[in-house]
Image 1 (cartoon, helix red, strand yellow):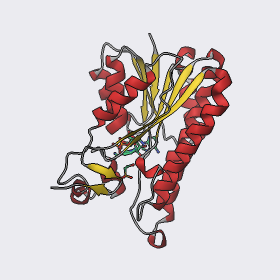
Image 2 (cartoon, helix red, strand yellow):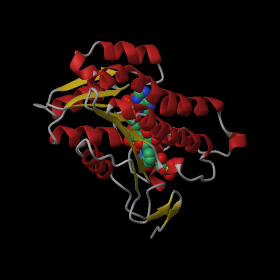
Image 3 (cartoon, helix red, strand yellow):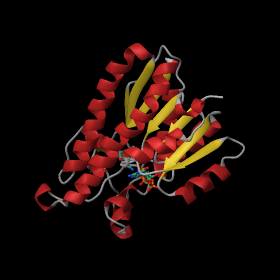
Image 4 (cartoon, helix red, strand yellow):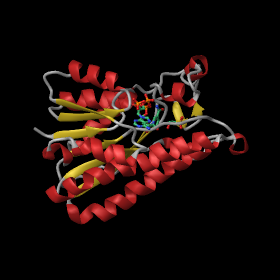
Length: 248
Ligand code: NDP
Ligand code: 8X3
């Protein structure tokens, strides 16, 4: 049975990816901070074997310790989906909160590195594998007030490209999916629980669903070894650019 390790599987895109990869016959490791949600997901996905690890991707020692508890085969998964992360705040840089900046850089960039670092020894030893990083349209274009979130996702894009080059001799492929507007808990987190403000982000058009991104991920990671779909930008049908959306 092929194996997939998914970060941020307690919600949104990561959760939908876990469901879709279970459907595609993968054994899973699902991670996030909210263990109870992950346990519930694991129960829902039975009889698919699902291993739950609860950790904060920002905590390098906790990431390493949690991964060390897995059976050796799962420490060398066929697929790693680096998805955990998000946005905190949407303010001009001069009004930004440095603790929001830390959260974004620490989770979206350092967190991705922490998890990748812990799994790469096993993946490179196997000489096969696929790392799928979740970037964003925000990493490709600047939008007002996006500042540190955009920068964190631009870093994911450059890490994806450079990791692909570095890992070329090892047989581990690296790719990125860049979603546009997907309705998840993303905006609730960005706006610190302000549900009305979060709902407004998706008003007047049909946003992407997490399952739309999961479909793309499953397609990419199930291509044969001679195929790397390196980057995919997925926009909502009514979306032309990050903040250019045809709302009714
Ligand atoms: P959600 O808020 O619904 O899910 C985010 C997931 O990441 C949760 O499972 C959360 O788990 C996990 N996570 C966040 N911070 C940490 C952390 N420090 N340690 C461990 N896990 C963490 O949002 P999405 O599904 O939308 O976001 C998933 C990814 O997609 C993010 O990287 C986001 O930037 C990206 N993205 C989202 C878009 C959108 O429009 N929704 C568009 C483009 C990219 P828990 O809280 O349990 O730890
Ligand atoms: C999430 C999409 O446009 O809100 O990465 O930054 S956007």
